[in-house]
Length: 177
Image (cartoon, rainbow, N blue to C red):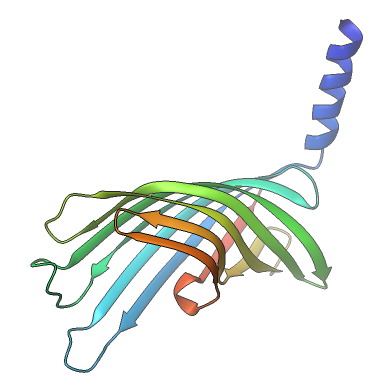
């Protein structure tokens, strides 16, 4: 029994020998104006914390908040929106070129979405998100993601597929300890 515990402790220690904690997040803004309709605006902030298990693998947690205005709609008298999402993920870095590292995040998230005076709806997603990280220094990185491959669900919304548009992108900075 001692040998098994010692081997397990050694395995955990070797996995975390190069471990680093990183904190940061992303901020987003989206504006859309259609003819004869009020503009849609959305502002989001997503603080993130992560832990490098090795050079190629990391785990993280993102907590995102978004709020905005959906514009005039026949369905909503008050078109303000409020979203919150709790999203743990795993990150695999598959290529490095100079200061750039290319990765894919795989994970799930759950939270709520509220539009207008309606009750908040539960929402969740599961899937993959590609990205790139540029190391500005040993401790500071600029990170960008775009698109999403997976499934998203809310009370009146179901989506499955590859979505590679700017509305699912994020840009942020991270500090590694």
